[in-house]
Image (cartoon, rainbow, N blue to C red):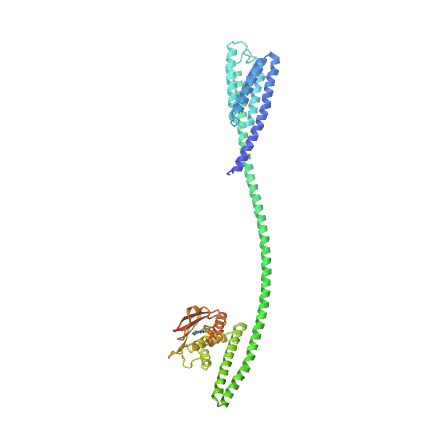
Length: 461
Ligand code: ADP
């Protein structure tokens, strides 16, 4: 597993901690060794050796440590110094065999640094010391004090050397194993640390998720409340709308009856009078009442469209168009000589709302007949049906006055009239647009001033 920067820093700080602790132990040992040397001086009066060799050894160790604090050279110096102390103690005790154990104590002490190579300097010092002093003593030199034995057999010497080597080897091995164990331990600690970190992050994320869910729930509740409120408002609005529609419908309906009576009375009055001026006035009155009647008719159409549900039934288009055009022939304000070019298959039947389709035809055809050019000697209105499997196209064309490009977008607006001279109320095309959209259809216009217009209605089957 890869260690991150934090882990590396932690490893370094851990190793530094171990080194400081080992150095502390070393300080105690060196102090005891030096004091031990002074103590041994009591036996054979070796004060100079105790001070000089012990002192120089301490000097070597502490100056190496001071000079190169970041290097581990001082530890190698320590290893050599521990060997020298052994030699010093053997000398001070005039070759006493037990003094060899101080080298083993030193070797064991070095394990704490977890570096098997530290066994090498002490081994080297011990080998040199033994070789040199053994040779000096047995070659007859005076005051060597290497051993208390007068003679050491080769066998004894070999055992001595092998046992010492085994101890140094075991200590080196332990230092090595110790280091490896620590490395594995550290690795495991890192892994556990990382796992813990992941666990913490996971818990944090879960907590965040819970928090987010709570917010979402709150938002949902708010949304539900708003939707509920909106639904309530819509229902209320629909209720008041339908009440208004009903009111408009009944008022319009009730207004139409007296208007019809008025028209009848005007006709009777016109028959009864011989005066031209009175006849002219009555004709004007009739025109105004018819206009008012047309306006009320438009309002009734609008009200019917918004009030009534769609009622689909098979509708013979040819028959419907015939009815519509028959009524329009006597329409006020239209030119009687408009030629109707109806191009509809007699058997063409579509499944749709008869009343609404009638409203569409009535408005578009009446407009096409009304907005003709007085100068045109050959005015016509074309009614074509284009049926496919998916939709029915209704095309109503005329060669009338046409509509300017700027006005084309506005003519479907409520009460919009291109000019004051327009004969209608400005409601017709608005009602057509609403009715077409109620049938899920579309309406498009192509027009050119002076040439005519074409309204194309498409209703899905
Ligand atoms: P209106 O009752 O005034 O006819 P419409 O909504 O039916 O109202 O039409 C809006 C305006 O569009 C009309 O005032 C008229 O000027 C124009 N218009 C409608 N149809 C045609 C047409 N076929 N040719 C030219 N102008 C038209």
